[in-house]
Structure formats: C-alpha cells, structure tokens
Length: 191
Image (cartoon, rainbow, N blue to C red; front, side, top):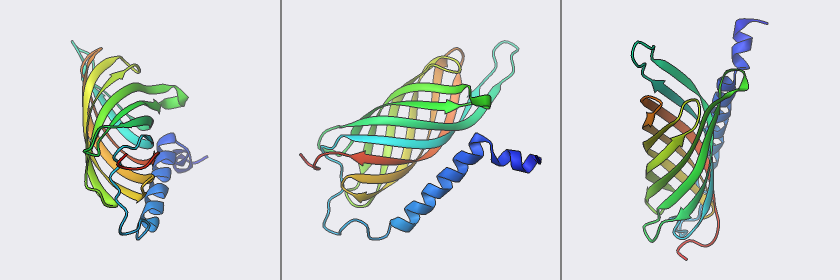
C-alpha cells in the first residue's frame, strides 16, 4: 500500500472529507429554504446539537519536559436549553476525540452559553463556556468562540464555529478548534 493511500484512510482525512461534504450540502441547500415571513430566533426552543470538528491541543512542557502538540478530530454532542427572551441558549455537552490507533485522545464535558445575533436565516453567535478535560490529562478551563449559523426552518439549522480554550490542571493547556454542526430544535419559538 502506498503512503498516499494510507494517508487517505487516517481518521483526520475521513473527518476532513465529511466536513467538506457537509459544507457542500449546506451551500446547495441554503438559498430560499425558509420562508420570508418566518422568524428564526430560537426563543423558547430546547435543542440538540451535533458537531464534528478539528482541535489542536498544546501542552507546554514543565521543568525540562518537551512541549506536546496533539491535533485531531472530535465529535461534540450538546443539549441546549432556552436562555430567556434574548434568543440565547445554555449548552450542556460532551466533546470526544479519538487519537492514534483508536485510543481516546480527548474527553471533555462542558457547559456554555451561546448568544445569537439576528432573527433571520443567517445569524452570528458568540460562545462563552467552561470545560473539565478528563483525558488525555485533566484540566479545568474556559473557552470563547464565535460562529455563523444558517437556519433552514424554525426547527433545523447548520453552523460553523471556531474558538480557543485555556485550562489548568496537569499543566497549562491551550487549544484551538473549528467545526461544522447541525442543530435540531423542539417546540414553538417565542413560547
């Protein structure tokens, strides 16, 4: 088997192809899917969010140790609860990522608050949150992120998000991430 063929079978290569496919599907489906009169602001709607992505985690070395850098894919599953009349939501979720040979590279439960700007199909958002990284080494920290979301209907949307995080525990940890996601909402907005 050639080296180029084995690179195509790596989990990060498969994740990249999946993200590219999702982006292409979103681009084709985006024009004109929500009616012009429909308000798409998420008020009062709980949600489930699924987001595959890529994270680069850096752990500076301590007292003579080398700095380690571990890039890789992740999957994130979150449950969202409405955060009041501003259209924001509280997120409670888990981020998991696989490393070399299938071992767990990342396990991190998190809480966050997502603030949306806009009530039309396209909207931006800002995330502020906290996490507890359990693997590969433990840490507690904060994450800030931003993104853009397109809502196909009042109950379904897709988004791109990116952010940065820093944590302390078993040494300092700094991470940068980006990913695409899908959000399924329940109930009637504004209730």
